[in-house]
Image (cartoon, rainbow, N blue to C red; front, side, top):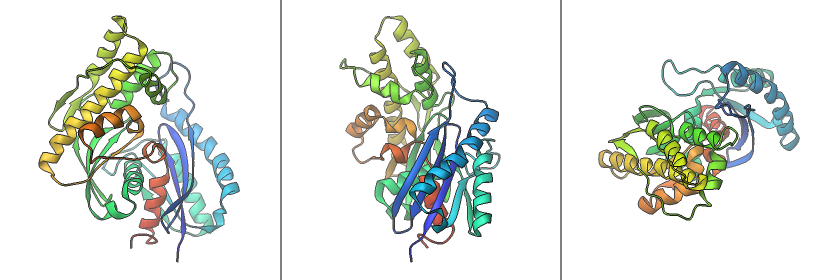
Length: 313
């Protein structure tokens, strides 16, 4: 017998809802980015919590017009950023409150997971369906708040193998974009502008083993702009530096963990320029579509089905 599950994710960037059918299909997904004032690089947690709290009832109503929510058998929600002790952000409280109320009103199971595990589940599902949920996988999660190379064991156990020692990749991309006058988050516009650059670019990345440093990338991009390089060139340089970082960290991980599948997730990894650069050098790496890669509730809805014993028993 197949079931439907609801996923709720309230990250620092977007309010997201998704419905998963345990026959192996994402029925529908909705996302609304949090509003950020022009020129700013993010939101205070109090503002993020407010916007999530305001958006969730409206988005649930929209979802209800597309899918009969009385058919939901379990609810999943991301309650914190990562599955580690001390991981906490107030913005996730909005999702937990909404999910708890929904589950109790319906008398159905509530499954708590994390934002990182949701990203992992969505990426693995998009890459090869349920197959990667049964094995160890190397997963890159690169976004505004992470530049992490992870060892995932069936999504349940996630170990950080490498990360940035300073600035995250998404932060670097957003800072370049905001400096060029784009709104936050700026990744889509940076990618659009970078695609217009036909000039060859040789990126310089700072990687030691499975650790990287990205604080110099922002300074390099500012220096290029000051030297008269076009915005298109600078955007391409920024993205290719991230791509080159991924390649070097992956090669280091593959020496220690040979033969494991490699999957790339996170909003930054939805860039066509990054994907093309990486896959030319590492053709066996899985890149997943943008709707599964950037912040979303798809993975949370999948983990709700698994946690409630409705999928992958």
